[in-house]
Image (cartoon, rainbow, N blue to C red):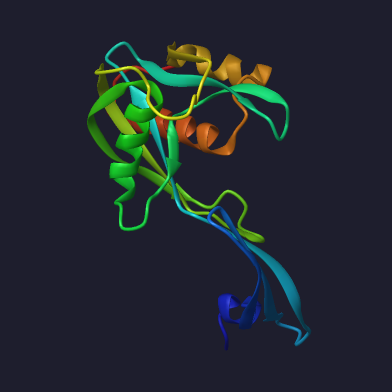
Length: 190
């Protein structure tokens, strides 16, 4: 008898690239579903991203207040960015923290890897937990944030409930970091 995975697996017969630039690749994938029906399905491919949850000894998280033009919406986000070709995602996360906030992380470890919209978007996100950071310079490059602040972990749930934290990488990172940190401590972080 076939396993459930074998019964429900889609077969990919190929992909035709429709649009391609530095930021996004759009394809039409020739797929066949388990009942034998065959059709083209849209697929969006984005570069890999690395995001860091930077926490300090006072149970605060380093966050940036940013405007996202596509939604015309403000919110608190974690530092992060796209992984350069040949770059290790952990190095990307540390580099992005320093470029975007001016802080250099002291320790950094992998937290979780996820796909934010697995149905038709390929955009691997690697999240890292950084413990401690020291201010080494002003942020460089593009203006990434209007404010850069250390936010107490205990305030995070209320900020999420108000909609001040709403992007997937930030939400997943904060929840995963909270679980990791609570598992390591005799007291909750918030």
